[in-house]
Image 1 (cartoon, helix red, strand yellow):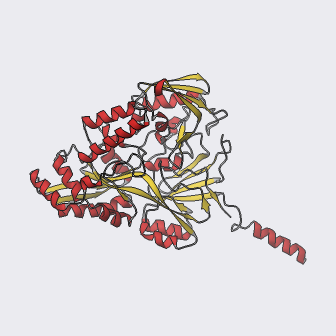
Image 2 (cartoon, one colour; image 1 turned 60 degrees about the vertical axis):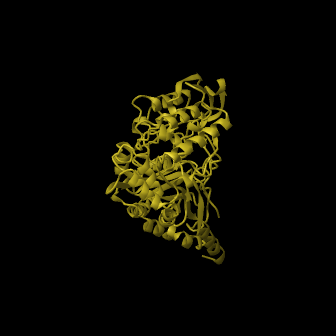
Image 3 (tube, rainbow, N blue to C red; image 1 turned 45 degrees about the vertical axis):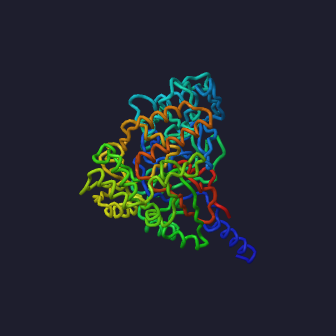
Length: 490
């Protein structure tokens, strides 16, 4: 081979080498494996972290800034003061199985979510619907029982995505949506893989293949990042190593906010937790900063109620339950409670396991013993969330604007408060922004004043990614790893 052709061959080999080839795939790490892939039938945030805005889409969607944006509805009109909504659907949209999307799919999805036999974890989102009807194949009118200024926001939840009746029977293991990515495979215990949807109605994603790997151990997560086995860990479980990763030019650290109110949940149906003084004693025993420092290595914002501090309607009520162990002891004595032992159920996330040890020590210091029970995620969902078989648990509630869960009958806190329920009812009917703000503030004050739970901190979103990756969400206004704008840079 002469020199000219040798140089050309070498240049060709260099340009097509894996090191210089354009990256069009990504591997993301996740702490928790979802119990299924049906966002309309499961409560685990890990489901939405894979499927939201990737596989499934709703009439509306939440953007990275927390705003409500068009989804499968390109626009909508509020009618009759918010008592009905007219959704104008996009043309030329198909499900991944080739079936065309139209108004009947919206009606089927909404009727299915609100049906008596529905297993939707957020069924209350749909309780206000009186009927959904097709004006024409691309227009749906949803009539509500009462005005609801927040209805477009409710339709942006992962629990409100539009599903295909033809494939819904297999949605838990082989989900079919309209999104920019199609489901490829699920190797349980290891990963879920997606591929780009070539027939997507919107802008095609730069990423052609995505793998979500399940790595629950913080040490293993760090090792996977360092070795390049994963390209990004959007919710990184080892904050103690963030400084090391930030100092490494191969990586960038993304620190943002979440909707995750991290709480010490109390089961009000378990004596003596039905007593206000006992709940207040527990709340005053909790040193929030010690928990944030010990469980989250300083990442997190103290909260005194079930509301995100970045929300403009947030009220700082941390003083209501300030750390005061002597007050805790006095309250327990006033309640006539001594030699108390409570079961503390801890799901797998590191914030719960590490935080649980600290909480147990703080409670022990005021005379409350705990029996720590470490649970796998499926066990926690079944025993604690579904059957309310627990005394205390630590969990982050990452659903957006979810203060209304305290008004749900039979919800796992078993918190029943007519005054709070009344405020939530008024909020559902309010469409004027100022009135909605007033009611939200009042609701926060009721929860803080009744010590509904031990409010710990707002979960920070600490993510790590290869420095060449752009487009990952920094904040988490919705449990999601939206890959539609993710790309590799040169």
